[in-house]
Amino acid sequence: MNKEEVFTKVTNHLLKQQTKSIKKGDYGECYYRTPDPESNLSCAIGCLIKDDHYSINLEHKGVQDKEVLKALSLSLDTTISEEEKHFLMKLQEVHDNDHVEDWRVCLSLLAKDYSLNVQTPLFNKE
Image 1 (cartoon, helix red, strand yellow):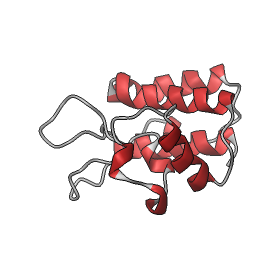
Image 2 (cartoon, helix red, strand yellow):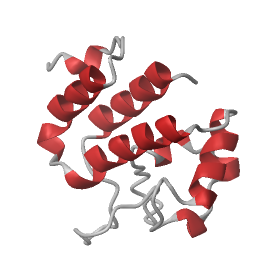
Image 3 (cartoon, helix red, strand yellow):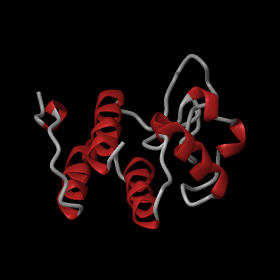
Image 4 (cartoon, helix red, strand yellow):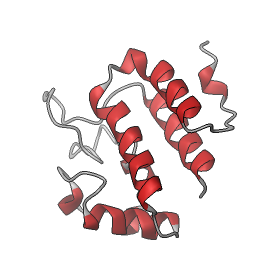
């Protein structure tokens, strides 16, 4: 997947999900995948990691962690460059640090920062 494809997948996921991937009743730390099976939530990076490459051991580690990068590389079938790692970190920051109601604007600004040519209908608020 190239940067535009990753961005589009993450953007569509986040804007459709409209909630952070946090444990039910917990308003602190975000998860790649929530431990609550009924919620089925995942974060900006968690939605990129295929089931075969996900492990609970990835939780509470940043994108820059070698285990997380390995799971992403296997899931995306590519080696992740230093620049791509920073891009993924920015996507993770939107999910983890920004308010859900601000995601649309934050993601739009990120697309501009990286000069991405993306088309996503979810950017048009309904």
